[in-house]
Amino acid sequence: MDNQHTAPSLFDEASDAASDSPLADRMRSRSLDEFVGQHEIVGPGTVLRRMIEHDRLVSLIFWGPPGSGKTTLAAVIAHHVNARFVTLSAVTSGVKDVKRVVDQAAVEKRTGRRTVLFIDEIHRYNKAQQDALLPHVERGTVTLIGATTENPSFDLNSALLSRCRVFVLKQLTEDDLTAILKRAVRDNDRGIGGRGIEIDDDAIAALAKMSDGDARIALNGLEAAVNAMEASDRHVTRQLAIEALQCTHYDYDRAGEGHYNLISALHKSVRSSDPQAALYWLARMIDAGEDPRYLARRMVRMATEDIGLADPRALTIALDCYETYHMLGSPEGELALAECVVYLASAPKSNEIYTAFGKALADAREHGSLPVPEHLRNAPTKLMKEIGYGSGYQYDHDLPERFSGQRCLPDKLEGKVYYAPSNFGYENTIAERMKRWEELRAEIREKESEHD
Image 1 (cartoon, helix red, strand yellow):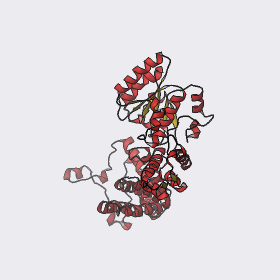
Image 2: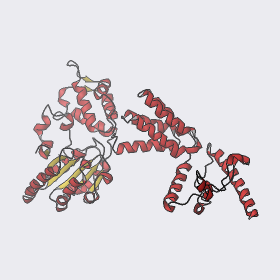
Image 3: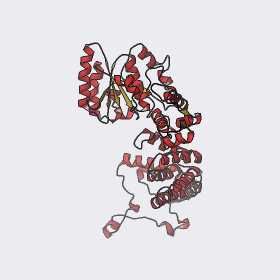
Image 4: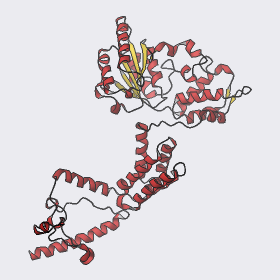
């Protein structure tokens, strides 16, 4: 099968020693004791560790960032329980591929050997493809281990999810990556220990720091540094390691959870009036390749949702930021984003407009087409005037204090309050105005009642 891979090659000595096999593949852990990281889920005494050691394996979902060990851990588990290990990629496989694996698994099951089916990026399977797995997981024809970088509660259907145990793998720490790199440096069989190469500790530290928790990136960087050495030089320096790695790698997918976590952090930092954090999250997203125009649009949203009339200039600055970036592009236009995010974070905050509009919208939907009061209706024709349209309307500009106090809400909603300005920033001025208008309105109502 073109897109099917069975387990033995993951632990095959000949394959490990092959010079054309990438270092990251050669250094895959072969046992639970050799596995680095994820101590909270596979350390001694943990639930998953006991399940494996007591041979009570169930179908699993591993959710974690790239390079955190999902594939390697699945292979280690299959090897530990002496199961046939088959891997599929959800990117290149479909229902027919699953069927072929299941048919072979049924044959193996009759001989007493179980099959662990590992599906990488399982979140990319659609609902029909996920449903096709259900009966085989339920009957135990295969033990499923799915790997995903996306939140399974969003991307896997509930029927499949309910039949699996979900374990969350965390980003590897710098200490984890340092241990993995040093093992590769020492290992004479699978690593580079037999090549007589000296690698500075600060080179290892740089690789661990710049690999963003991804063991594959760290090992690929180490291998690239070794391959980039001059023939007469057997020494890997920090500078060489950094050049080989090229740049910092971020766990970032514009359509995935990493994206939503970062934009959430940016928005909440602005809302919390923390310009330092807001600048950091903005820089993270820009450096990871986010479209700056998306960030500019989000800042327009922040200006209206979290600042509102506490500082009316915030919206103008956010719109100017968008136009400035549109005119200059990157990298010059990115400074406009930085200026805007600092302004928004340091501006007075109010969500009263956001809240008020939500209340008004709820009433509009609940009460339907309440009639417009007659004195507010448009009266462009003689007939409309004769039947009362516009009758009694007062032109505020002609009145003392330019205020009529006339009723403008539908009768059913009279007295309803949607917008209550805060005491922050410019909204404090608005609050004073509204207070004065209420005083005038009360005076007008009192006079009206006297005439009645």
